[in-house]
Image (tube, rainbow, N blue to C red):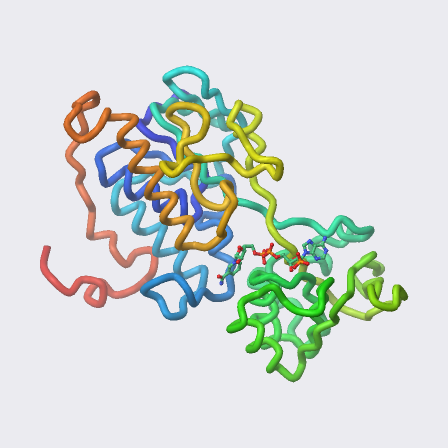
Length: 340
Ligand code: NDP
């Protein structure tokens, strides 16, 4: 089926949902496509303490708020619908999914980034059988057990902080002698008595039978290898951009595959914008939201020709506030302090 919209946004993480709430509220018919779970990477973050306005909130809760907000403002969110191919050369941009072809005047690519793999023997084989990339999703399976986290950035330490509260023993394996993660997270993690960092160490193989049993490690200082018995391993060694369909359609990417944008979030193709982790740089929820908003405003100008140009007659936006609280299950009274 062919569906037409003013803007199609690919990806329902913070960048895509922020963009969608803006374009919908500005009166553009907006469709957001998401291949897997709504909310993106943030929805599996154990906690977030640096998104302004929320001293501490779970990633899942923040994601629900983003989803609800975009929906209430009128964005149509279509989950489980992966964009498989883009045709971007003409004025009408096309997004092809297994079910539909979407045609739009503007496209916002907010496909995010995925976890970098270790690429060591056993990693692929034991994925889902002791190898995980998500502590919130899989941590509960390792309650009272011995696990390792690999990595030294904010993701590794945040995941480790979640796991430290569940497991008996946690090793954090890092190839340097200090974490790259923020000091606030790092010090909190090292205060747990069940956490042991293994500095200057890399994983060379993941071994087991039907599940993970041990890691083959190399101490980079002594250059010796040894085995560490574990029940599971969580890999958190950085992100790679989900930019393949965009680059295949002619969107320019840098040497690491991140989409190249200017300050208006414009790509090299007119009418095609990108926002969030897929553009690289500082990967923070607040940044993704900000870029999503800029992309939305740029898309609005592209579609309408600007506030007074009237290139396109927009429909009056009907915001359905009665849906407020549906997603977050929060009583409407606590969200609504004044009469509309
Ligand atoms: P980062 O790129 O920040 O860190 C990756 C870590 O993995 C580094 O310590 C790196 O080591 C290590 N590493 C990379 N490749 C390998 C490898 N092949 N073998 C072993 N170790 C390896 O990625 P993150 O996923 O931690 O974070 C991504 C972005 O998201 C960052 O910008 C981060 O700040 C942000 N983020 C922010 C959060 C927050 O603000 N609360 C929470 C989570 C993420 P080395 O240091 O030696 O390069």
